[in-house]
Image (cartoon, rainbow, N blue to C red; front, side, top):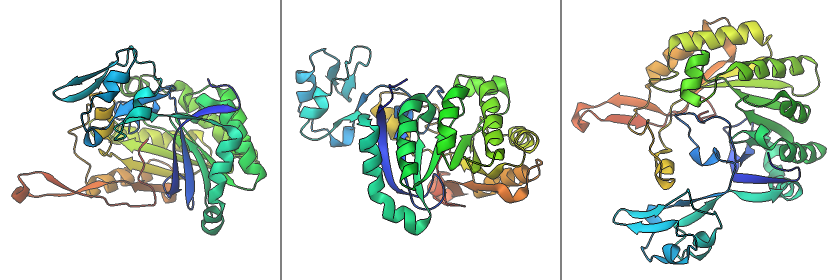
Amino acid sequence: MKQTGKGTVLEIQRMSTEDGPGIRTTVFLKGCGLKCAWCHNPESISPEVDVQWFAARCISCGLCADICECGAISRTPDGVVIDRKICRRCGACAENCPSTAMEMIGVEWSADDLACEIMKDRAYFQKSGGGVTLSGGEVAMQAGFAEEVLRILKKNGIHTAIDTSGLCVKSSLARLLPLADLVLFDIKEIRPDLHKKFTGADNGRILENAVYVAESIKKGVLPREMWIRTPLIPGATDRHDNISGIGGFIAEKLGGQVTRWELCAFNNLCRDKYGRLGLDWQFSDTRLLSKEEMEHFADTARKSGVDPGIVSWSGPVRFKDDDLLGGKAVEENLIADKTKDIC
């Protein structure tokens, strides 16, 4: 875990409408304890700064390989290859790349500097009822840093949210909850065995922490609100027993404290990220779910025991199959609600 006061930030995303109410600035922190097979942000999993190669930008000058002192970069007929086992992440290749084809992933920030940077967007927050969301990766992996940033934001009257997978020690959540107006909490899979198969860890601690967040809301201070997000991944979590099971858990264990349960449609737009990191992705050829499928799962969620009014779905969907296009799905980026993120 990063020391208090310093943190590694993957990205600052401005003008977001995906991670809480209003117009928001979402800060993605590096590091996650899960390794979800469908991860939409694979570059966020490692807590360390890394490097990626953009094939489309590369001019094949070979400078990156020449300048690499540890010999981690080589040129092949298919492009640049990075041996990440020996790469020291020094950044020399990115600093000297004339076409910006080599790019560092992750920047170290101080809590004060980050808070000042994101408060530049305060006018948008005030007009839209928005604020700042700390996401990841897993925000609780940098709990000390996140706590300092949230504390500064709250002192300045900014609405705050944290986005968590729930896989963290309770003491980390305890540091963050009193400083967050909203908690976005991922519940991906209700069966422990399948959760471990798909993400690398079972869901026992995650479900315990979901209850802990709900109990904190009942105390009437902060957080004030909890949203649950569930990714619907074809061939994995897109099962009616999974949705019914999660709904039963929300209804029975979270005490009416959940104000929104969002089903997030599978998104395949991250394929290029895996290529830039030299990774294969098992869902690269998986097609999107259809609008009808998403509405069917939403109907299952509404009948699972929760207040039907809290259920929504979002994300890109397959519009239709067209034989004139060789049977290839025509995809329509249809957004059923404000958000289109995937957990």
